[in-house]
Amino acid sequence: MQTQNFKNPVVRWIDHRLPVFSFMHHELHEYPTPKNLNYLWNLGSLAGLALVTMIVTGIILAMHYTPHVDHAFESVERIMRDVNHGWLIRYIHMNGASFFFIVVFIHIFRGLYYGSYKAPRELLWILGVLILLLMMATAFMGYVLPWGQMSFWGATVITNLFSAIPFVGESIVVWLWGGFSVDNPTLSRFFALHYLMPFVITAVVILHIIALHRFGSNNPLGIDVNGKQDTIPFHPYYTSKDLFGAVVFLTIFASAVFFYPNFLGHPDNYIPANPLQTPAHIVPEWYFLPFYAILRAIPDKLGGVLFMFGAIAVLFILPWLDRSPVRSGRFRPIFKVFFWLLLADCVLLGWLGAKPAEGIYVVLSRLATAWYFFHFLIVLPVLSLVEKTRPLPQSISTSVLGGGALAGAASATKEKPDA
Amino acid sequence: MSDTAENKGRRDFIVVATNTMMGVGAAAVAYPLINQMNPAADTLALASIEVDVSGIAEGQAITVKWRGKPVFIRHRTKDEIASANDTTIADLRDPQTDADRVQKPELLVIQGICTHLGCVPLGQKIGEVKGDFNGWFCPCHGSHYDTSGRIRKGPAPTNLEVPPYAFISDNVIKIG
Ligand code: HEM
Ligand code: FES
Image (cartoon, rainbow over all chains, first blue to last red):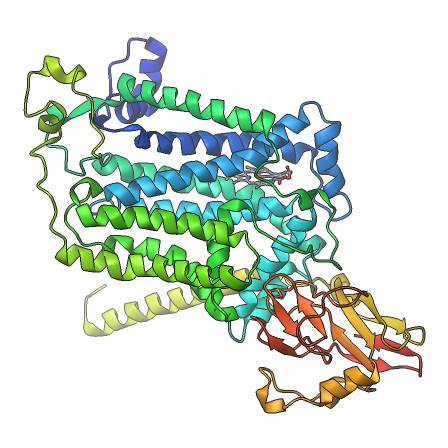
């Protein structure tokens, strides 16, 4: 890495010995970024913002929370009623988890549409799927902490998934619980792990960014950057764009926190946990619903668990399922249709996951589950072979500037969303 | 040291031996770190309870807590016992006769934990749904159990478990 000549002598003195300032300058200032990124590229920085928000509010909550079955529920109620601004911190943390998932889901579908998982970004994509898995584990354990009815029964059902493993399943579940049911040992270890996991996520996020900066961002055209004319420096162009995105995001987020803080939650979680009574209708948090629908669609315990984890597993191998050399869905007329079908299918699965497992819902869940796997395992490999893609533009700058017009025209020719 | 075949062989041996011992050492360190998560001695010590069953009228059921989980004790009616015996064993998902599941036919003692994913099935209280086989029904993902607590329909793989118990007198059972 080339070190910079900073004006400030203190900065220069430090940078000569510990080149953190050069590093930041290189990665966040001059870092060349494709000039045609659309707003879907804001979601990465928003995910980072959400992670920081969760860590800050989480550490504050931990100062007032008591991880014990006799006190957990009351300590959360105390946070809500007595701790100064406790209600605000908790509502931010609670809704923050949901918004974190919203952001990450959009981020993932962006990658799916523009083929961002393709060479040379396979590891970048895999690290991203790993982050999703870690987030799911973290959010699951966090939801157990307030020790309400949904906390308890969610924990019971999810930990019992492991009992489906042949032979060792039962021992694994007892080991996870530290007893013969979800109880105090389970709560205290979940708290310890819930505290730890976000920092593990942070570490994986750093790897994710190192992998990103190796080849730079993909872009809506999905073609490679050819040289300086295709990029602009990250600062001030994308720093300001990301900042604008953050303001929009925070506005929506704050509206949820202040006006509909319990909209995404479940009222049963304000009933203290009761190990002798399962609520009539248990549902996981909304971000788990598509996976829950897949679990319930399969009429076999082990099968259901395998398909549920399989739904994530196919994402890990996606770079090798879709072999089409064209990245962006813009130039893939058939892929584009299937992409929207997949999105609709996932939304449908989410809706079904919240419905009781009976009648037509079971039939629909099975169809939607079949479609999900059909898309990844059949449609994508076949399309890579048979689809006739549209011609790619020569370069990012010719496309942006409308066939190599003068640079002055750049501001007038904005990125046109392709119909 | 010269590079004769003999010396090379010795060096390979040292490398393999060192790696093996490191592996053994790592496993020895990992074992307590993993095993600490298994149930602690005091959790294991809480493992038995005594219940007086004389007060349960015919047709009535009570729920007691054992190892943090509900145990269903049902004083079955003649009809319930008859229907539990009146099933073709070969048709069951987890074949077991009713006689194998009870010590006294009128008293059914089972773990009130659905063998699918651990919810508490409905059917203990008057007025709760009992499912298609008039025993218990798990609302979580729709498992139906019969009057012997055997799985008849739905995703659960096995019958409701019978916990270890013994009559310590005519009226009192000890669970665990
Ligand atoms: C990846 C980041 C994180 C996610 C997705 C996450 C998710 C969650 C969720 C869903 C809840 C349940 C909220 C509720 O319904 O009440 C929760 C609770 C909690 N979290 Fe986190 N969390 C994260 C980071 C952290 C961190 C870093 C800490 C620091 C110790 C923390 C501490 C807590 C505490 C003490 C609670 C219980 C209080 C409460 O329920 O509001 N969290 N978390
Ligand atoms: S837990 Fe009873 S049916 Fe799933």
